[in-house]
Length: 302
Image 1: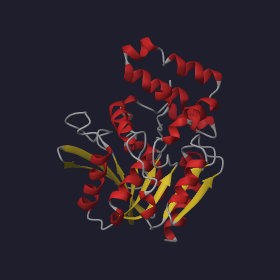
Image 2: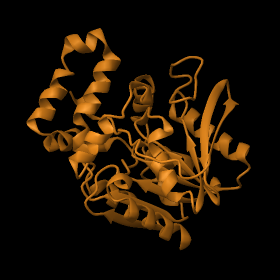
Image 3: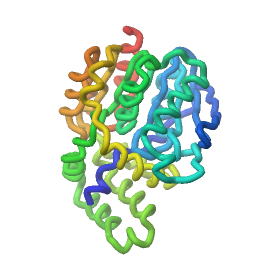
Image 4: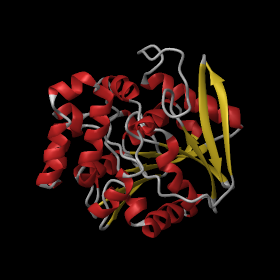
C-alpha cells in the first residue's frame, strides 16, 4: 500500500479564464514540449507536482497572479500535451526535465525568471536552481517535499490517519491485487481519488476536485520513472549556495507536516517561511487571497 500513498498530486481544475492564454509547443531533443502563457509582467514559471501531473491544475495559480506577472505553465516531458517518442528512462528523468526548463527559458528570451514549484515540483525547482542559479531571480516553494525522499518515511501514515473509514474502505478496494493486475492504471487513478480528502483542511473541497479529475491528467509512467530518479537525489547541502530570495509557502494542515518546510527555509540562506492557516496541500484552493497576497508581497519586496 505504501507505494500507492506516496504520490503528491491531485488536481485543481477550479479555474476561470480571467486572462488571455497562449498555448504553444516547441521541440527539444526529439520531445514535443507544451507550455501555456497567461498574463503579462515579470515571468514566473509554474512547475506542477505528482510527479506526472499535467499543467492544468496549476492554472488557478496563474489566474491569481496574471494581473501582476506573466505566468508560464509547463507540461513536463511525458505529461499532458508534452509527447515523448518512447516512455523509458532515457527520455523520462529529472536531468532531462531540467534541461527542458532551461531550453524553454532561452527559447522565450528571458535572462532570468521567477520559479514556483508545487509539491514534487518544488524538488524539481530546487534541482533547477542548483544547476542554473543565474537563470532564477527568486524561488517560491509551495508545499515543499524537501531536498530528498526522506519525507516518504512518514508521509503515507500522515495521509492514512486523515481518512474516514469509508475513504479507507474505498482505497483498499482499489488496492486489490486482482483489480491492479487487470487494469493497473485505472486502479492507481481510482486510489488517488479515494485518498484525496487527506490533502485538504476542508474535505468538501476534495469532493469538488474528485468530480473533475480525469485519467489523462496524470501519467503513471512518468510518475514511476521520476520517482525512481528522485531516490538518487539529495540537495540538502548544495541548496545552501543559492543566495537569492526564496519563499517557502506551506499550508498549516498539509500532511507533509511542518518539519520539511522548516528545514528547507533554514537551508536557503535568504529565505522566508510563511504558513497559511486552515489550508492543506493545495492552499490556493482553500485560502486563495492569503496565498496570492503572500506571493505578490514577497515578489514586490524583492
